[in-house]
Amino acid sequence: MERLSRKDAASGTELAALSDAQKAAIAEARQVCEARTAERRIMHQSALATTFEPEARAELDRQLRRDLERFAETCDRKIAEIRNAAS
Image (tube, rainbow, N blue to C red):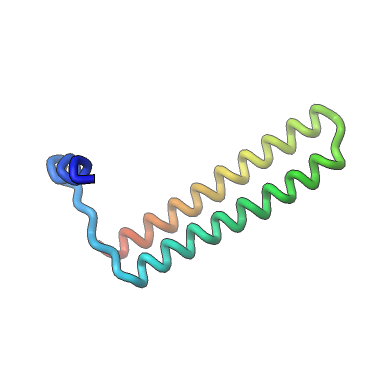
């Protein structure tokens, strides 16, 4: 950690200390993302159980990957907004 802190200081990047409210907001954003991810994975498994065609299963897999990427991007964006509010 110290090495990373020195590297950030050398590059001019500083992290502002987060307030308790911001930490709670970040934790909530991560929890929402995890919940959405878990829900989507359950839905995916359910859909796979009733789909037997390889092309249809591949499409379901692509949809799952796309949705998981979107959830992660949304979560990262929300966390960045919360962190930027600290500045």
